[in-house]
Length: 624
Ligand code: ATP
View: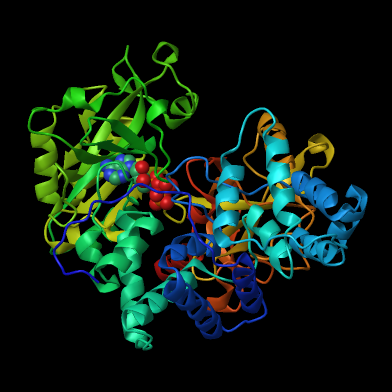
């Protein structure tokens, strides 16, 4: 590792790697992991392999790490999603392995794993000549080309690239190639285990083959995680770790304009007295909780502006009417920044905020200024970086002042979040009511001073509490649940799905756990629309990471892709559902769930987590 203190100029993602590590070695490792259940043993297999890679070819560590987590690059880099559909894969396997489509389909119905089918077909196929063995570099670069190929003929271009690779596959390669193309390795390998293994491999490499202590590995993994919250790009993090030493990551990886950091999140609360209890003896402040879409606004040194969604998706082109530079007080002095804000639909005639439903009528892609009918106003509530200097470790009080000093707020275009600092119960109650009259969802209550008021990227923090007026009666918040399956409609609902099986996401095991069946809150049009949207995502068998009760299966299963925002009266323990079952021996389920809307600004892994469901359940038990 180089000396401390050197500054880093991060490189943009390469997305093309020269790695001569045989793909077969990687697949043998996947196979060894698949047949192992202990997490410790999996970590040992994984880190041993990564260490041997590092010793031979450090550059291979990045593409291999990506293949381990079935990704091809950072989430904010567009066009890197694989997740290829069944039909293309079935057709390609049939062509490459000399079987009919029907044969592959029948087998798929029987065993539900295209990877296994491809491997079996490939391994009994006579080959005339010995193909050149696949390398990790070749496979990775081909996967990127496949993900990026779109437009006319893209299906056939994808098909021929896959076929070319399949005909070179031996041993376990076909199985894991197909599963990588589906974006699901199904080997029970969680991202956390990969990060621990990467940390262990790098530390062992740094210490010339000597195994590091468990504490050191844990510390290094937590440094990688912290770095990832600020710069969600494993390529940059691994390269910096290799260059400067993994323990020096935090000195070299800092948030920077142009790379979306993971936003800080809030915890729900159910009453003003709960808020007052939590913040007792501290300085806190309240803001309106605007009901729109999170917008992280970046001004980069080169003058370009970017707006990122809650997920880090680039949505700059969604808001062509917004030029934040226009509201900067001193453009000569302000070269770059990152501002956290909420984009809200704005009624220009009446000069007021419009409900979220109006915002969601806007086109999401290819929006041109002349087409903008519903205008957006950005409500800025935080500044995270100014002139390349990170501000997240300053107090919120200071950050708010910097925000006010840097921009001119302009009503209906770029404004500051409405705020009130008080500890008085009645004033808080009035302010909450006023926020709702002003078309907001309620309040965000935030720590104002001290270390606890620092901005915590990606954390769902108790230093930010959300108080949503509509949900005070229920569990305090709505839940965002993954649509895992559906039930055929009867009577009026014949021909569409009449109900859905929903689940939350367990961040530790990286599994979806069922938590309710829902059939309320849908209009007939919505059911029709959902049928159209979901029918193409049906799969013969639920994914192995869907945990459900086999005595209560769905009629059809989906590849998890959609989230429903759902309200519930309360939560109860149930033998049929699986949310949080490890904690209670039984699952937690939602009683009388009601559909609110589709959440399309979140990934399925951003669904309400099992831990959150447990917290909701426990806080309810506590209230009673
Ligand atoms: P979560 O983000 O907690 O998973 P969610 O996406 O459903 O849940 P909410 O529960 O509505 O979001 O609450 C947090 C969101 O509120 C933020 O992500 C942000 O988009 C929005 N928001 C509106 N006003 C503010 C504000 N003043 N400060 C912070 N966030 C705000």
